[in-house]
Each structure stands twice: as structure tokens, then as C-alpha cells.
Image 1: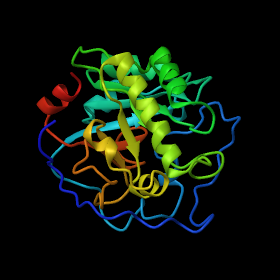
Image 2: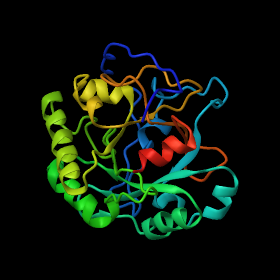
Image 3: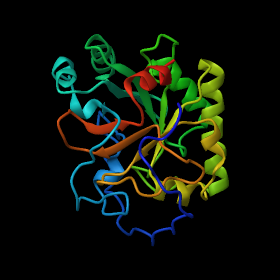
Length: 265
């Protein structure tokens, strides 16, 4: 993808929070729908969330992301309302697949959207390679049909325990690299990385190395993106709210419709 249509300023690493400060509430491991992209953004009071202004406006392509928490989605209505792409949760850790994935993944394409799948990573439960294989084997693959987005790794605050999953920044970076490299070997594409600036800079030690290969899907519920995670000069997608005209979360692709199609190829 060429050029950034939504400007962003890269900043130094953000300081870590005090233990427990502003932490997102823990999720129930027995929840049949598990975690979702933005669980820790929409349920905590951090620099990732700023409701003080209006929703963003400007250039870009409107899109959305959903999980089992949205159930069966009315995709023709979402398309009529302006959504042109969607990310759909497929898997979490190993052993979890979303029951809503088939309707959401196939329904979004049938309605005319470009769509892709995402995986909620749990780095404390198994290796990055194991989770990448599980993701690809359960709906997270990629094909060069011009309608499929590269699979996305959702890596954010731990829904079930220690924010950084008990890993050091070096261990976390190694886990993400293991997932990314395995996904690329299986599909020919590097995965998109979904994260927040605060979590990334804290839990990877502001590692800039992934920006060279992995598109950024930035999560910040605010009228402006703010600083990007270390290494990235621009985002591919910005998740800017968890409520709006579309079911699930509201997103903007950083480009025009032609660039979105090329991003999928």
C-alpha cells in the first residue's frame, strides 16, 4: 500500500502502567465467544480511549470487524450502510473456533465486501507457530483472489491474566515473530498486526522490527489516532470505535477502494 492518507506522529515508547491501573476487566474463560478485537480498548480507561470528540471523518474506506458476540450479521444492510471490508474472528489460542465464523466470513463476501479473518493470540498458552497453524487450518488462510485480506493477529492485553501474558519484551517479540513467520510460510502473506500503541510499546519493549513486513491495524477509540506503535510510519486500518452504524467495531482503511483491492492481493 502506498502513502498514508491519515497522518500520524510516531512517538517514543509509552511508560508502563502501574500494576492493575485502568486494566480491562477479566473475561470469563467459559464464554463461548471468547475475546474480541478491542476488548481491552473498549472496557478500560487508558490513553487508548478518548471519547471527548466526534467520530473521525475524512479520507479512507469504511469497514467493520465482528466476532461471535455479534452473532448472525445482516451483511446486506451493513453493505448498504457503507461498509466495504470486514475482519471476522476465526480462532483464539488453540482449540477455540468461533461458531459465528461461517456466517460472518461467507456472508460478508456474498454481500460484496472484501473480508479477512483474525486470530486472538494467547501467547501464554502455546507457541506462535502452533497458533498460526491452528488459525490457517480453521479459516485464517489467504488466497490471491482480490477479495481476501491477509489474516490478522490480534495481540492486546490478556483477557484472562497478566497483561503481557507473563512474557518479557524479548519473549513476546519472539512469540509474535514465530506466529508471523509461520503464517507467511503457510500463506505467502505476512499477517496484519492488530494492537494498541500502549500495549505494543510496553509488552514488546517498543520493538520496531515488525513494521517492515506486517501491516498495522491500530486500535484507538478516539477522534484522532495519536501516536503509532514503535516502527510504523502509518497504519493500514484504524479501529476507531466499538459503536456506530455497523455491527461490531468501526474501522477505516487508510486508502481508496483501489488500494483496498490491492491490499487484498
